[in-house]
Structure formats: structure tokens, C-alpha cells
Image (cartoon, rainbow, N blue to C red; front, side, top):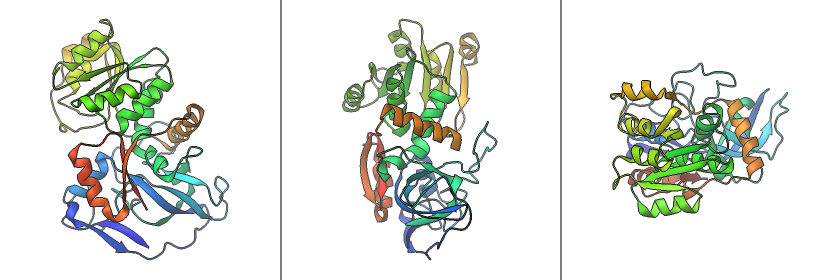
Length: 335
């Protein structure tokens, strides 16, 4: 079967299309999935582009979706023909987080889903939302679940809350969609007026061009009438956190879900103390969270925003497109 491997010394030019042995039939408690799609995340880009990030020969991509081809003895959750989607942290089934690294994450510590088929334990997947294509389902594993956990699980978002989202990547767009579907208000930021207009078309109540307004956190605070936003989904890290905190209300919630601007930086502790802000580190979520999210998506009939799809063998080009920053929404691989 066809697959992609990250070959030493790493980098997009070292993503190799290879032939692998067929994984065979599932054993007891396992399912065989004909994989049909994946979607790109910054984490996947780091795996593919940074030399030495993963073991030589690793199959990349944390997100995988496809159709169940066969089930092993004792499998009752799935039937042949079911559309399923992978879990980012397959060993985190339920309860509070217990894993603080990527050793068990597909596409990083173990082989991922840039391949034609996989045989795995049944609880490494969940059902996809009703009526979803494989590409739509593949957007949920990382981006969709990160937004869901940030706002619904940890943030306890409710109707009437205000949510600030940064940029036009997959997590931010899912956060906007979940927020609007649940009756919240959304403020969105981008450096592109074209993307800000697309945010408006998706329901954003206010938009801010952060290049023209470098104090965008204060601007977001003002847009709430001087109360502050209830939830911030921060993708940037140290360079954006001060502005995210400036935007937040007293007792507000900041979900730190990315480190696009680096891994370390100063924290305005006076603001943190005076506003009594909750800053919550988020690394996707559990299988239980994903099951709940799928049920929520079925209830609100949400459809993900997909910018463009590439073939499996075009994976390097898909990451270069991600590098360009031109996309609005998810970039997918379909195979």
C-alpha cells in the first residue's frame, strides 16, 4: 500500500512516497480502516519540516479518517462501512489529562495516517459526524477538538459570552463556529482585510486588523463596552499572550493552544493577578471529548471550513501552501 515517510535528515524535500506491506486483517478488539483523508496542522508541519523531530521513517499526520473495512472479534462499536475519525491522544480515553508529551501521538511518537490503510485498536477512533465526508471528518481530530475543549470543556462557554479568536487557522475557525452555534459573540483578528470579511460572512460580530491596530487586545476590550471578553483562544504564545490578557475580562479564560511565536516569554503578572485570569494550556483532548464533540456537531449541523485539498503524493506542496499563510480554514489530503 502507498504511504508517506519522513526520511532523515527531515525537511519537506525528504517526505518520501513508499510502498508498504498491507496491514492485514484485524485481530480481536481491532478495526481495519481504509484511510481516505487527513488534514494539516502546525504540529504536523513541525514533524515534517524540522530535522530530527521524529524517528527516521516515521509515517506523519495525526489526523486520519476513512471507512471501516473489517472488524475483529469482540468489536461492537463499529460495522463495516462506518465512517470513522482518529483520536489525537489514543491513550487518553477519558478523565483529566495524564500525558504530557507526544510519545503516543500518531504521526509523532508513533506512525500516523499518511497511508492507505491501518489496523488499530477500536478505541483509537470514533464515529464521524453524520453525513461527513472523509476530508470533513479529518479536520476534527486536532483542530476541531482543540477548539471544543478550549471553549466547551474547559471554558464552559454559554450563550451570551464573548469569544476572541486569533488568525484564520483551523482552530480559530472551529472556535468561531462553535461559539456562534451556541449563542456567543465573536471577535476575530487577522492581518488580511479579505480574511476579516470572510470572518464576517461566517458570523463574526467584530473584526480587528492586528497590523493596523497593534494594541488589538485593548481594542477587543473596548468592543465589549469595557467589560472584557470571556474567552480567548490564543494560538501565538509569548508574543500574543499580553494582548490576549489585555482583552480578557476580570475572571476571564485564556486557552493557550499554540506557540507560533516561540516557547518562552514574559507574562504580565500584574494583569494576571488584578484580572484573576485563568490561563489554561490545551493539547487537544480525550476520546470522550471527541465523542461528545461529534454529538454536538450532529446537533448543530456544523460543517468545517476547508480551504483546499491535495493528493497524498502532493504532501510537500500542501505543507508549502500552509507555510504561505494564504489559506483560510483547513488544508486536507485526500487519497
